[in-house]
Length: 144
Length: 284
Image 1 (spheres, rainbow over the protein chains, first blue to last red):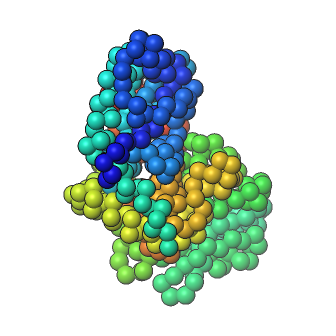
Image 2: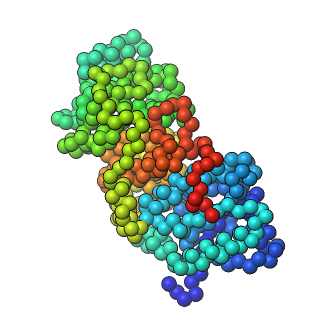
Image 3: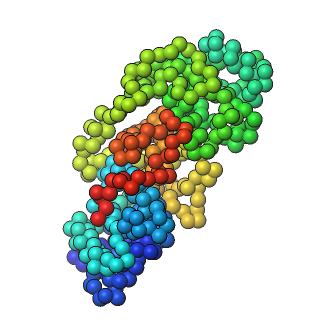
């Protein structure tokens, strides 16, 4: 690990809650770690588990996923459906030996700017501890 | 067997079905699929413990779907696949004639011992059929039994590094022939995600990165749907233990959603629905 390595955390957020929450964090001048790369989706239900795989393939060290709290979904039940998908994805990742700490799920509302900032800082600290996700990134070099 | 041949002849002779899918002998201790339209060919039909293939796969083929009615010889485990296809609106019940076979067990693919899936089979007697052939067989376990797999328990004792290395080794042998997909009765997408190139989700070359992505998506798309027929693992030329992943997700579906695929065609598949009290301990 090079000394000035910084984790890349791909962050998928829903348009209605967490994106607005992140926006609030910004307009409120809450400082948070610059390691995240936010990608806005219409709803957490839009987040296909393949997004996680694609992020790791393209060099992410962790993936953070966040949407509206249960009951708050703009589309009523998108986040409930997403939750079931994530349950399955987590089990599959753990069977494959991929650290579940590298895929983080959260609910964060539009008013929780402070929660968003804190979440990002915590995740970022954790991933700095874990180090780069070389196992996955190196799969590329092992081409036969 | 006589009963099966007689029924097949009757169905084809009376033009009740256009096509009958069953098994024929493929040499000693082997059987292979048989697709017949002519009643005279029905004499070739066999059914024994070497009839491993899940013939339900054929029902997804567009040319077979176009026929007005098709009969299929199916064991209880195969019928579970029909149930999933019905619940996903992929089959029209009236267009298939299910010849359900009572079945105590089939053999392992090498023909030496009882197939592992049969030790916890709950459908020795077909649960959905138009006609049942064979004497009723005592079920060994009840429908309510929660099945736990020793191999998964054993596997989960490994550390994550051991698991990762295990799968890296196994998946590096994948030659991306997609036999697992082709044989699967539940992989019916006309265009598979792996065949899309805009955007390209999965590297189509047989390299470790693409192999991981492919096997992740394969297992996920079967989560809450896999009926444990074991065909993917049987046909895999690289002998990758694919069922280890499938069975883990079956256990997860049972634990988290109280779901077992392939029993009730009316039930809502688990990943198309939700419960407000679903597990969310992992969500921050």
